Length: 96
Image (cartoon, rainbow, N blue to C red; front, side):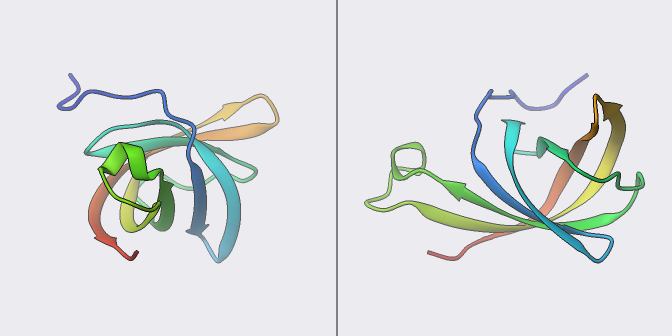
């Protein structure tokens, strides 16, 4: 059972995992995690870093906000020619 509501938001996302970096977008997001598609697989349990660009209107700010996050991969499965990756957010910091 999920502990938080998911929102089907497609937000810009920069992911760093397994010595790789990719720019993609979220498929959905919640207060506790994120789902996205990547061109590479990431092992379950891996620590990843990602930056999400949050629109000002969503966070109630005057300008868009970047959020740096550290998380753990809880699911990674094939999805066509890409991987669908689900990660929990362990830490986050607003950077602007």
